[in-house]
Amino acid sequence: MPDEKLKATGSFCGACQKSVPADVVKRNTSGNHVEIFLCKHCPSCGDSETKISSDARFYWLSHGRRNVEKNCGCGSCDCVKSADGENVGFPGRNAKLELPASKPLETLSTCLALIEIVDSCNLSCPTCFADSPIGTGQKVDAVPLAQIKARVQGVIDRKGPIEILQLSGGEPTLHPNFIELIEWCHTHEGIDYVLVNSNGIRLAGDREFGENLKKAAARGHFQFYLQFDGPEAEAEIILRGADLRKTKRRAIERALELGIPLTLAMTLIPENREQLWETVKFGLQYENVRGVAFQPRFSSGRVPSETRDHKGKLNTADLVIGLVEQSGGNLGYEDFTPLPCGDPNCATIGYLIKAGDEVKSISEFVDFETLQGFLGDRVRYNLEDLAKCGCESEPLGKLLHDLEMDERHTFRLFIKPFMDAEDWDQDRVDRCCTHVIRPDGELDSFCRYYLHGGASAAKMMRAATA
Image (cartoon, rainbow, N blue to C red):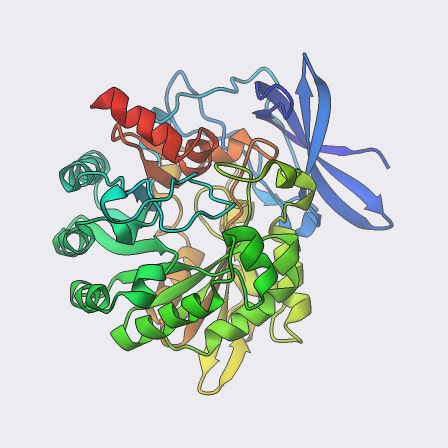
């Protein structure tokens, strides 16, 4: 059967890295198995393609292209629905592919704002999306506290309160004023929740730091996103250059002592793909672990050249199918739903319910399909829709908020596939609600910011704006 074109978008040529037009197509690859491909058309290098979903059931057709002249958030005339459903209307290939780096994002909701507070890290991982240089003690390259506050305050002044502020780096706990920054965030009326991206090394080994962190985090609305690559050594060595499993376990146990909740942030590569459910079971042992964030490795920042072949990159369908198949009946496909904000291909979420010593499927209590009106009913996205991002206005958004608030009884399964140049879909960026606060104070899409070099780009930008 010939390919079925689902939509036109923009991407990057894998050879020359220039912005090029692209089509998303549905392809019957064997029998009745249908996959989704991004087919790119470079006038200089020719056509190329990348698989973006290994199962069409878990790809959602959506358009995010804005009217650049009006700087608004109006989408195209296509419904947002599963790629194995009926599709109508596609934007022309002559639509502008290159948007201003940050200004259009100012019209959209910022569900999560990430800020790099240090460039340095106390690990030298072979894989690092931020390309952070190693540095400890006096060698830590930290952003001055006053600059961090000013950049965060600037976003709040322009856009209102920040729902989730994520402190990142490098390794953010190395910042010499880290505790003071946490205290400032917790007393700021414009910041609701603080997440810390961390490898856990300082949490595991520095008791004084832990005690100070306990006091600073006592207000709640605080969580660590702990780097955790699964229960086996192979992926840990590939991704981190060493077996750090004992250190990660100490960090989890220390956080439990201190009353600090954690999410295990698992970078996915083929070597740990079969450990999805084992990682979930590991997390369920600890009452302070609230869930697992599954993040397929993407080729931005520091990634070894020999592993940049996109054929090994996992996608959302790979992870949903893997979790269900490995769970021994504890999970079903109906336990997962795209988030009702940003682009539906940017985040998929599911929950397990903890009932005493038992773990139950969320589908025993909630039918996500009855709450997915945002996927089928929105024929046109207007500025107001995108400004509030669907999170507060949709029944599903309200339910997910309620589940998040009941941390004692829920365990979150969060799939977050970031894009690199190979699978770049400009529509997803146009609808992005996961933003980086850049050194110049402007907002940028997470994927676009790290595509441009992460810490290296940040250094140059800070130098230019100093």
